[in-house]
Length: 177
Image (tube, rainbow, N blue to C red):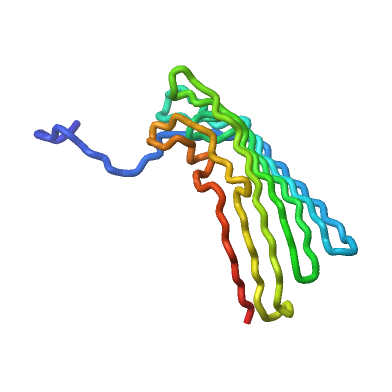
């Protein structure tokens, strides 16, 4: 029984009331072989999310956020073809994010898949112990725009699944001492 005059008790301890349940499959494979011009390698990686459900309070019904705006997409993947010579190298990477639904718009609409290519060229001026390594990176080679999403945050894309940056060029210099 509470003491006389006590009308409210505030408990400010942190309590985790929500829950998240995820299930999925991640696959990766790599293969490399030597040639007269250097090593050639192929790398594949994919993630297939099967379930992504949130429960906001104990006893509440779980809600699936999979394949929805600002939520995770069920399928994404990456494939890289690379060549590494004695002092030079090159890599071409394909990035893929699957199509999904914008369930916040009325009527609900499809959001297209997002595919980009990245390129990396390197040259090693060092003697493997010291010296300069130069890399030229070109992300989103074909300057693909992110697919349109009627996002309530005010942006016309889904930042959880696409980048608005477009083509990004960078030069990397690494010095070994």
